[in-house]
Length: 367
Image (cartoon, rainbow, N blue to C red):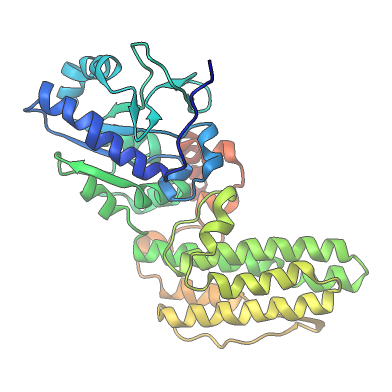
């Protein structure tokens, strides 16, 4: 007997929406007609950001939906809803199985079955509980300025890019609006510290090359490209995704393709002088992007020698100072000047994916 094959690839978000509309919602209407709930797909997954492909189907991909209930309803009917789904959901939607094999191992793998109960992709939460677990804050309430500095940008991105299929509780829309982007002065603070990261590295591309260390110069060039990319996300008010999708998301920015062509030349050059030339083109474009925002006094867009040394740099500290000067909030002004958000000084997936660890690192703002 031949094993049943999956149908042609469809974007995961389309599958999730059809799963909710054709399979989950009818069961709720029939069995819980008075239940107020919300439904959506907002958490981790390449499909939530629109980057999934045929390859994505090998784990943590398939028909999923989170049902958001009031706390009292979660306690009173949550277990029975999960049992209902396991025993009455259709085995397939759009030709894809609704059953997940090994659901506790890296999100599980969709697999055809004809037996019940099925391991389905329906999860339950309260809106408050979901945001506390996923972001580290109760986003049903106003969010404290400092809390923004410990929320993972990747999670904020999926919350913004995901879909709400139904909002009977009226909270998901409020939460998404509240978390759509950083408060203005927090945004300025994050941009200032991203410029600062560039400022810390900018003379080393030339200095390494000047002593014959072309490998070191290339490595610095690569690091600078990463920092510039993250600053471009901030300038264009887009949350930064994690490493796997950084380039894909960057290409969708308004300035992404223009900068990408410059970056490729930087990475391909064999001499530091040529590398510096292309890097300076990126700096000049970045400075123009900053000035177009109009959030600070205009900063002259130029490159010049690094003090008395013959390495051309943009002197990024000028943008750092201008951004800090534009901050009005006394709370944000009191923050350590060269720290930034936790995601700007920590580069570890194990930390970025743990809101508890991120919040624990927030103690640095009290130092």
